[in-house]
Image 1 (cartoon, rainbow, N blue to C red):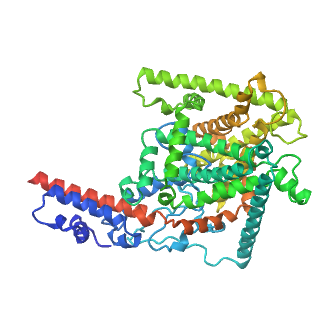
Image 2: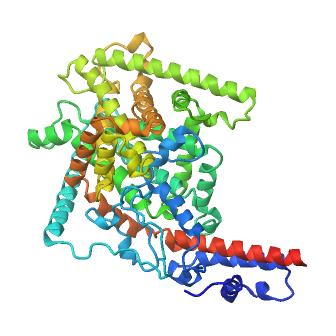
Image 3: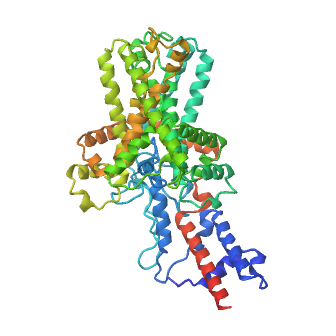
Length: 621
């Protein structure tokens, strides 16, 4: 490959620069600034228009910055969450959130990729990551081999067997039929006044609009979190003009420790939305709609399967698929800005500050340095700020204890929405077992991405953890596990909501007034317990001791259960709906607006080289 000198880069850049940049009378500083703006402007073109701008080193290899930027960005793509979280700033809790960006079939496209290749579907094994690679579904970022020739990404499976195609088509078909049936049954139950809320006097129209608003909001929260995490390493000036709302939201979320705070507040918001959705649409015990066969009603309505399928497919997976590689378009709405402010407000209220106490404890056990302290501010915060922080921590612990007292009392008195016929002691056992299982699923995601880059030789010293990593990172299992995990978490959350939501008959808990009892019946207390005990606390543990966490023998069984759920294809309709949504909304992949990671890094290097030469010229003068 020919050497590319500083002057040759400037010559190419100058061809597209404004006349002011090429005027000989311009000063060196003005020239450097204009050239920098030109480089940035090139990134706003389609990626194919900037391929020729990619500089190479003398040996034909890409600059180290190219690979570094790719690795930095790929680390933000490793989860979704439900997950539920990102890895900003410097706290263990923030590190634990590194696993919650969209992780379904993510792939960084180059100019040679067609728009159709952007569509990711189950069964496309080309997107499977190997253990030791940080990005789940993103190519390794090496664009050149040793002799300087450009490497092209390996093409997707072009010759899939007829049997595989038929199986996938069957999954899409039966999954879509199940989804349509589930939506029909849930809506029928609402308008027949045979759900928990409508049977207690809520008008069916109110329940209907509330339910669909919550589903839409859940989708925005699930996909939006992944987008904000994925946009962290990207220069915000690249999309400030094309996506002003996205830019405004990202500026807010990425300021200081706001990403930590957003994740905590958003997690509570997700759980609360699930609890309220369950209240609006869960079927009453004696349900009978349209004379439908009792077995069908028992399987889909009484068990809650119809509600779970509707929520997982429409409110979570569909949004996460599009948010994986259309981040800029997905959050370019005031709805996401509103969600960000609400999440930050929830965290600032101190309602969940008890999780910071857990964070501090495990940070001390793991020998880590001081954590960020959430909304307590930086380390140099004033005494008053720190006092206010610890007051909220103590208050949050008190609220959590009170929530447990009310919920346990209601379960023992059979004053919750738990299915009739289930003994109280069984409900108590299920309550804690399901919270532990949901927490295990959350922690698994965090722990797996915490060890994804560890050398295999180091993992071999931990036999069980090594076996679990081999199972998860083998073939296309990572994406399958994450999809199955999302289904499992949602099922657990709905059953927990069923157990912990007050709404049964009987005297008021602790003899409180009716207004207070009505507040208890909203499910807020159950949502607080679930958020802290079944999610955030486990994330802290997993981020502090990832290998020890993965050494639990139950992890292997859980991974296989998640893989089995995904293989069933029960939620495969999410891929079809995501494709339809993308076309209707006009979403474009992020590379269309800001170029690929390699192109951004190359342009940055051009800027650095130009400014360096101008600085040398000025010093000589």
